[in-house]
Structures are given as structure tokens and as C-alpha cells.
Image (cartoon, rainbow, N blue to C red; front, top):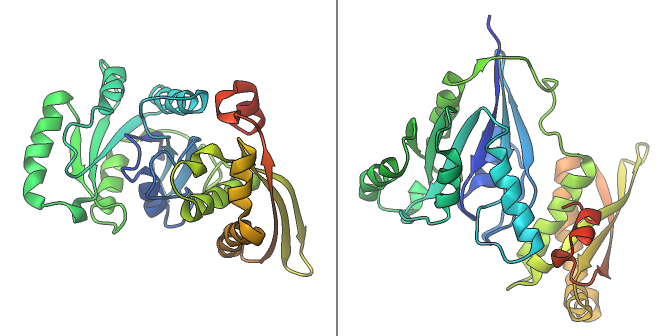
Length: 294
């Protein structure tokens, strides 16, 4: 039996459902999701293993107009993925036919010989009669090998997508052990879950001004307890006050939500120590960004 494998990029504008799709394909929560755009900041690998294949998915930050060094780093990371994979999936969503953010993606794909598939997501939220005109419009912009309407949230069309991807895999090695689902570290997954809860509890631009680092992880196997010390980095003293909240209410709410998710992920009791620290204008300072993992 010939073994098939390949790297697959999931790329597109912000907030079209790329992380939701990765989680749906893998059958577990690996990438954080939020209704807010530009939630994903790092490329995340998710590994789907089958008896005769291995698909390595690369979830990427959304392509958008850049404002800060952080945003430029995110977009550069996403576009670089196009050169590092074997198959490209470009995701858009219903009722956004123009998607000007697609221009840099399609420009980077010109002349490529890699299979390129277009995914029209959130079909459960738009009128189905709009699909055919959308498909024709996108095919006029780029010669996609296939255009697949899907609902990443509800799973509609996702099985067909996996079949389409498998049919385009080439014979190759198993890049990762078959029991491995991601290349991300435990600390990274913890920091992402905390960051997701920040987006949930805080509004407006505040979540975009924060970063999370994990300083310590201790596991007591006898007690079934995972002790985590993490820091939320913000850019101003006033932001620190909002993140902590009156009487510490906000930081406790973020910590409680994160702890509940962490316990589901790791299957043990979690003690989470969260602190807020000011890292002045970190999203505009490339050295500070590197210290914080970007």
C-alpha cells in the first residue's frame, strides 16, 4: 500500500473560519477561535493521520492591511506558507465576493503548479442561490482546481474536502509520529487558550494589545494537578488596570474560563496563576515581539 503525505496551507482573510476548519478536520480543539478578526497570530500545524496517509495542515494568520510590526509579521508568516506547502486551500466566506484581501494571495499564487482549492465557508449563513455566481466570480480571478462550499462550524462539506485533499496527495513519508496531532509545545497551547479567553472577556481593541507567555509548568502526577504560571503582557498602565478589573474581577474571570478549558484539554485539575505585566508598546517593537514569541 502506497503511503501518501503532504503539507496543506489554510489561508485567507481574517475571520473567515480557518481555525474552526482545522479544529473540525482534526476532531478536537487545537486552534483558538473568536468572532473577532486577526485572532490567529502564529502558524499552527495540525496533523491528520490515516492508515495510508498523513495530512499536515498549516493554519495561518489572516491576510489583512498591516498597521504595526506585529501585523506585518503575521501577514508575512501567512504568505510564506504558500512556498512551504504542497497544497493550498484558500478560504473565503459567503456574501463577500470581492474579498480585496485575496489579491496578495492570488498574486503570490500566480504561476504555481501546486493544487489550489477554494473553500467558500459559512454556507449555513448565506442564501444558497448566491453560491453559483460566487463560484463563477472566483474562478474568473484564479484557475482553482476545485471550489468547495463548506460549513466549518457544522461540518457540512468537510468530509468531501478531506477526500479531495487526499486525492491530491503524493507518495511520501510520515512526517510526524502517527499519535502526534500538532508540533506546538504544551506552553504554546496553554498561552493560546488564555489568549482566547481574553478575546472573550474584553472588548474593542484591548485583546489586540495583549500577549501571553507561560513561565512555569509543574505536574504533580500523584495529585493529578497541573500548576501553571503565566503572564499577560499589555502595552500601558491603564490597560493593566482594565485587565485586572475592579477588585481583580476581570483577571479572575479570564483565569477561571481558561482553567476550565485547560482541564478539558489536559484531563487533570489545573491551578493557574495569572499576572498582568506592562511591556510598553510591545506590538511595535520587533525585539519585544521576539521575546514574546512573535
